[in-house]
Image (cartoon, rainbow, N blue to C red; front, side):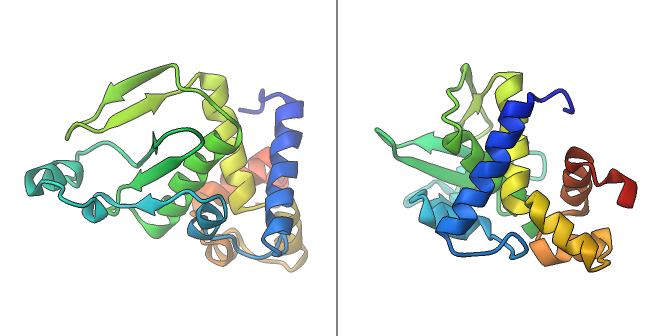
Length: 184
C-alpha cells in the first residue's frame, strides 16, 4: 500500500483533520465511529435492529462463517445506511465503520455487487478505491498528528491502540503508513 498516490494520502490526512475540527476534537482525542457517522447523518445498525427481519436470516447473518464485517446500503440520493456484524470485537467495529464511511466521504462508486449469505448485497470497489478507503479509515481512527502526540509521550503500541479504541493491527498499519515504523 506504500504505492498509494501521495495526493490521495494527503487528501485523506487533511479530511481526517477537517472532520476532527468540525467535531471540535483534537488529533490526540479518540473519534468513535458512531460519533462520526452521526455527524455525517449515516445511521449505523446491526441486523438485530432491522424491523421485521426473519429469525432464520439473523442466524445466517450472524453465523461464525457469515463472512462479512459491514456494508453500506444506499437509501436514495445522498442517503446511506451502514449495517455491521455485531459479532466482531469493538476495535474491529471501529475499523469497519470508519472504512465504510471513508468510501462515502471519498465518493467511491461500486464496480459490482455480490450477494452475501442471507441475501444482503455487498459492494465491490476498485482496488485503488479499497486502498484509499483503508487509508482514510485509518486517518479517521488514528491521525498522524495523534501518533506523533502518542510517541512524544512514550506510549507503547498497545497503549495507543487502547487510547484510540483501535486494534493493534490498525496502530501498526498507521505507523507503517506514516513513517513511524522505526519507533515500534
